Image (cartoon, rainbow, N blue to C red):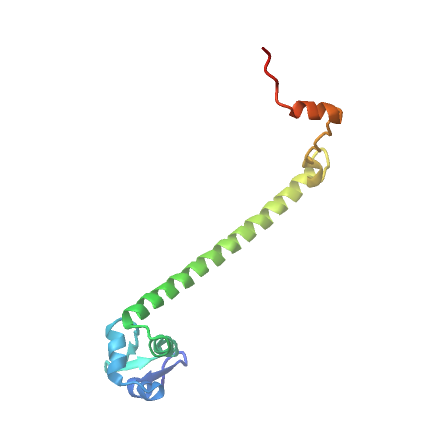
Length: 152
């Protein structure tokens, strides 16, 4: 294990292959397929960060435990990245909506405090009208239900 600027730990390919019980060529294959992107030292040696190891654990879980092939792993990892990006966008949007709602309520309260006629928002909302009960007799209602007779 080596440390670089910022105090992050980086691992050489031999240490990673021993830790996860995989052949170094498998790690090189994952890099060639674009599933892992280890950084390189000045001597062009691969060095794996903690994030790379988390990605490797996900890849190994998918391939070993679930039987997913490398093409499927690539699709799953891309979908996970897209979902994470969309989640960030949704969080940003929710923060924006919350800010706008707060600003809107503050504006509303300011308008109410400076209004010529003081009223609360509930005074401005009309309640729905109740349906009026029929005033005709039950017999008249029964007659209206009878089909009209044909005159000859």
